[in-house]
Length: 248
Ligand SMILES: C[S@@+](CC[C@H](N)C(=O)[O-])C[C@H]1O[C@@H](n2cnc3c(N)ncnc32)[C@H](O)[C@@H]1O
Image (cartoon, rainbow, N blue to C red; front, side):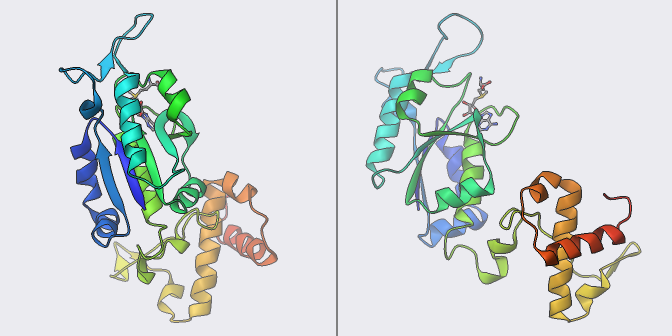
């Protein structure tokens, strides 16, 4: 997958892209992250990318022309029909279903805003989707863009090894993940659940399903409400609620 990020802070993006799963995917040629800096596409000698807002008020607004040229330059480096996504607190809130959809695409153009935002006409003319990380305001779109890239790259075939498989992560099956434990068996009087030490793989699998269902029900009932639970899932959830009285 090829990702072009339009950003005034390319170093910020490049640094994040060097680490962890994203960095490894880049080194293995499964992902390429490139930055286009609107300053390099500003028409004037001062490389101006922002200006005062019409109508007055605080802050500056990112100008149309440098962003338009940057997006065109980014698109020229990608296969046709890759979406232009603008990171914005006003966009659709990003979720795993969107990450899966983007992971099926050969490339993405991600536009990171700064200041008060972007001239609205640029969004109308060039942006296919506005995507938000959540109901809060960041100072810029770079962290949001890299959060999106991180979530998407985990889903690309061959990026995660079997041991790290994304398939059991939260939201992949519409549920939160089950709890995890590692050595030692006892910490501050807290014991690892006995079933995980049993070596009985069927019991362990059933326990994990039950815990995932139970904690999703307790923490995010909205997610459970969206599912059509199977007989087995209903039985496991009842069992969880019996074992955790008061959590309902
Ligand atoms: C300070 S914000 C501008 C906020 C804008 N004035 C508003 O209230 O909608 C600057 C940039 O940060 C990015 N940003 C801020 N919050 C975000 C969020 N929740 N999700 C994605 N991007 C965000 C966007 O790219 C935005 O253009």
